[in-house]
Image 1 (cartoon, one colour):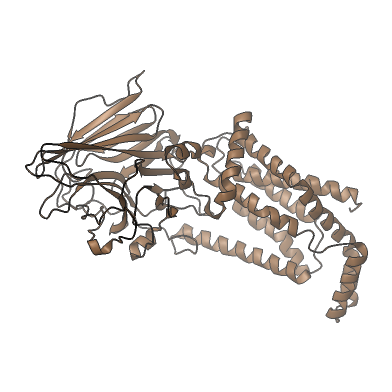
Image 2 (tube, helix red, strand yellow):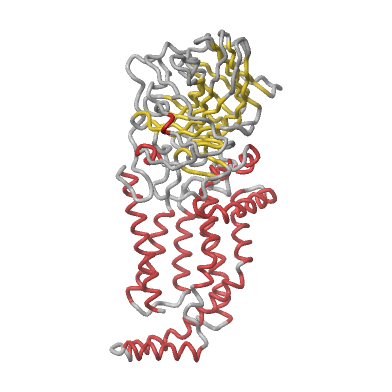
Length: 565
């Protein structure tokens, strides 16, 4: 048992050093073990490009029929390449405002190239709002759509086509619930495309209608692509002491939620689903996400590509069927761009709530968030909801914890006898082990009794850690007095200091290791983790502090019952 405890301590201590080293590498932009290094800034638009126009390379690379698997039943046939462009024409920026967002469109393609979230402040610059979509020399994150066809020599309106904004309101009027923005393209090879974005009050979801008007003399078979283009940089201001996923993701019923790493796209070795009869695509980052959602069943193709230095895309391509000469066809899609509010995302599309990344602990984390949300509904404060949830978990595991603490207390009681044996038989390790086991039998002490119950509970508390780390509801949520944002570090460092002190007090309550090196490690680990918690969100520190206080109270009570000082 002693060797096992020593091994466990060394594993924890070593992992702590590894995490600190990895955090330092992330801070300095070096390669890391748990995430990609800090990537370069997005490539600026090419010289001579129109202001606000997308770089010509920031689109999916051309694909051939052979490059697309056809194993998925009902999947769309291999699509023609999403177009690239030469020098784009001069563009015009169109800005619209609702109660939730301030959106900027580019008249080139009618693309959404900037999206400011009016209800969320930017941590790097508290005087401004979060900007989710943006197109600038330093950053690229846009939503694009257009038409493609397999007919040789035919180009249909796409996101490089100059479009005309139709007359209408640009601000959601008081009392109005909807605001429509419509773009129309010129006739390109006999085809005209109209895009209508419909914003709704209180909503981050935009209904996007594409109308294809065939004004040519022959039938066409166009395909619609819905695309998100982004640089590979993590959001500015991300903590250096924990890693959250940034990148494309998609969902199908067959393979469920699939995250796609930028570095895999760059290497061309992605293994995501290539086609299905349902599903959606998204771009994910900490707290926020965007997604193209088509709820109606039908074949679709999924593509990812690195199309320029530090430019990546994920696209969904859908066949629209034949459009006869003189006829038209409309298609509706949903564009979500906003905070990862789990309940609202779940109602929007199957699996969309999974963009809120819980890692390996999704199965446990989802019910824990459900319970946290219910407690918030009763208490009206996310900080007190965190405290209440930890109390509920401690009650649920009370008898398991009690068994562990009784075992620790008994170990502490027999520690003087064990130390005496170690001194007496220090040159006879086998006999010392036999005598120690005899004492454990006589005193009815199980050396593993203090470890196993705690190990059983660890997945639940790790899952709760990810719930608090991932929940945008903690963002800008106050608790008491100086804690005005549970997603930001404690500005006065009071919670981390209390958490470190409580961890040190727990070490004092536990039986002291007989090995001097183990004893030093036991006292060093709270200081190491305490240092890391100075940079953690206040909500996470509150969770650990509450857990520590309740554990101390229960352990102190049991120690008193058993007469262990």
